[in-house]
Amino acid sequence: MAKRAGKRARAQEMEETLCCCEYLDRKGQRSHLAACLCECEDLDECCERWVTCKSLPPGILERVTETFTDRFRFPWIRGAVKINISLLPPIILLPFFLHIAALHFLLALVTLISLPILVLWYYYLTHRKKGQTLFFLSLGLFSLGYMYYVFLQEVVPRGHVEYSQVALLTCGLILMLVALHQAKKDPGYLFSQMSSDKALRQGSCSNNMFNKNGLGNSNGLCRVPASGVAVHSNTESYSRTLEAETGQGAKDWCLKCQLVRPARAGHCRICGRCVKRLDHHCVWINNCVGEQNHQAFVLALFLFLLTSIYGISLTLDTICRGKNTLTALFYCPGVYGEYSSALTFTCVWYCAIVTSGMSYILLLQLLNISYNMTEREARIALRENIGRKLLWGMMVDTGQYNRGFLYNWIQFFTLRSSDLQQTAEDVV
Image 1 (cartoon, rainbow, N blue to C red):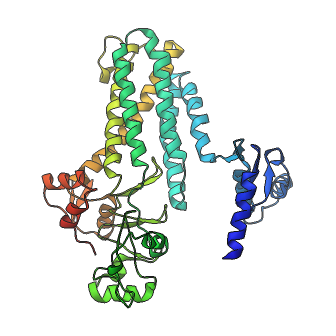
Image 2: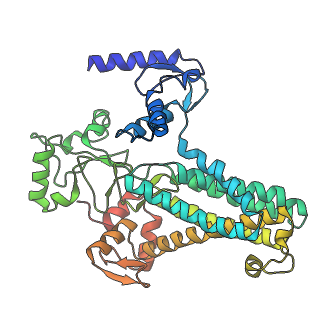
Image 3: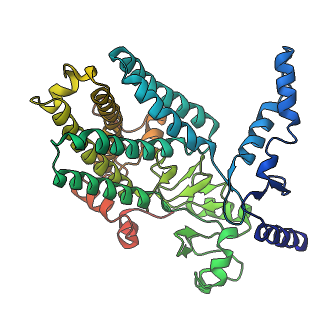
């Protein structure tokens, strides 16, 4: 412990003396941005083997990638800041593809078909590796910013959009970003005994929750202000005790987080944490959707759809005069005769594709809420072939938590109310 404390103290001391172009690399050594191309033995070996047509040794590409990501930094106060590489592809590639698509109708057709395929391919690639990525969050935020920029630069100057309409669109965008920020917060993480010791010492849980033998109360739960639960440190004996008392130890005990999960909680394999009332892990916000942020997530989706549809209608009314929105989306003669109109029309179609995908996600969310189901519970029900399928298999109703349409929505709007939650659901 003393050695670890000494290492942390030395690391903090080194960080305080770093200039704007210096940083501590992944080995804990002091380095400089000017030396980013030094000591690249793995990269040199890769290039040499590629030139001589020799096979690469296993693991060398991973080491090259780790070295590159560690050295890709930006000068900042008290040391260079590490930049996540997954943020950059959308910022660079999206404007490039949209400008290429604006050159001709066929190029637009190929580009707008290829972009969703590439995004889905990257999603399944990262999903299979169970790793976090900022690619989708960067793509979503940059798409919003770039579409708004095109709207202000290409649509508003034509004089057909009133300032009140621009203000309304801007307000919708700001409200959506506020809801998105709320959805990025703690979804309701559960904490084990090791992470809750500090809170226990500060009096977060009353001392009478534990008896003389060190075991918890009858349900094994201890409420912590950080929305977590604490369990006895002797995990094996506690797991056996829980199984003997409730018969559900294997189902409700998380071996990875070493804690007892309340009803409807689940372990996210991407975040590596247990979340109360886990719905799913959303790559578009790079966060789990759980009890604490589910309302903000649905609100962000709803505001996005309203803002996007309103922006699309304003744009089409400007570049395709005299046609209604739906007709102009599929038939707008002469739009590719001018590059500015072609770029705007291409951006409209890009927005329409994204809006269609988000509409499907929102529809699933509304259906699940109406039947008091989470996405995680629906996937489990489909995999185990339980419950009844509704709406051509779009959702599954197990009936376990379904209390009727009205009560289900009341429960959703009061997710953060612990009193109503305890009366509605059994806590293991």
